[in-house]
Length: 188
Ligand code: SF4
Ligand code: SF4
Image (tube, rainbow, N blue to C red; front, side, top):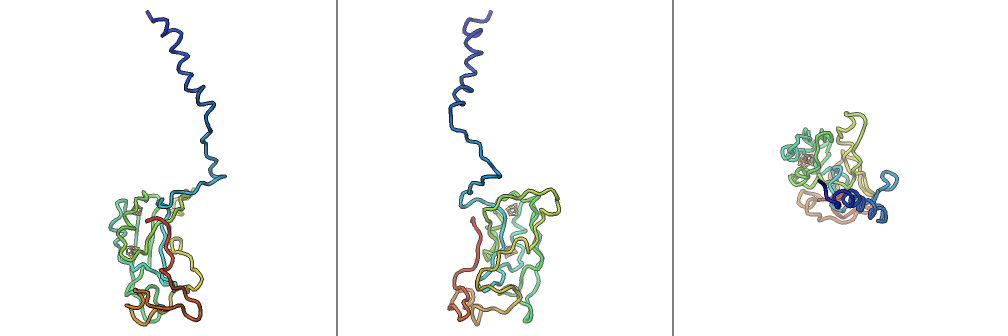
């Protein structure tokens, strides 16, 4: 036989939570109409960075692809030539793809990258109705050209030899080439 408490109080007591919540501040976010900024180190879409003269930092080494636990990265390297230079080293990433249907945004690939070519931005809107559109190609991932940068291929503009180039031992040129460390995206 249920007690009086069980018969009359317990069914009503459950509504106490509902009643209290009615007077609390609403926490519903109005996404996508209002977008809240992410934490600064949030791992979002990747970015392939450039040197300050516009050359690509990626050397096509595939370390990011090997580090990826989801097999989401595909890289094909190729050699730079005297006439066609895309990165300051011997090699560059001719093909670079990230499959966002597989990527779990864990960040292991950016840890593996030896040149800091690969970083992650705060961009998180990675949904699409077409599966093929979620395989991002190199042109989708490359950092935009900032003022003073030149679209590769072109010769190394930041020093006469590799040492000068990589150490940043160069001055702002008359044309206004930048002197900082190039463009690097968000979290790391
Ligand atoms: S963030 Fe993780 S899952 Fe995504 S490409 Fe990099 S290593 Fe692979
Ligand atoms: S992004 Fe970095 S790790 Fe990946 S291929 Fe390019 S240089 Fe190598």
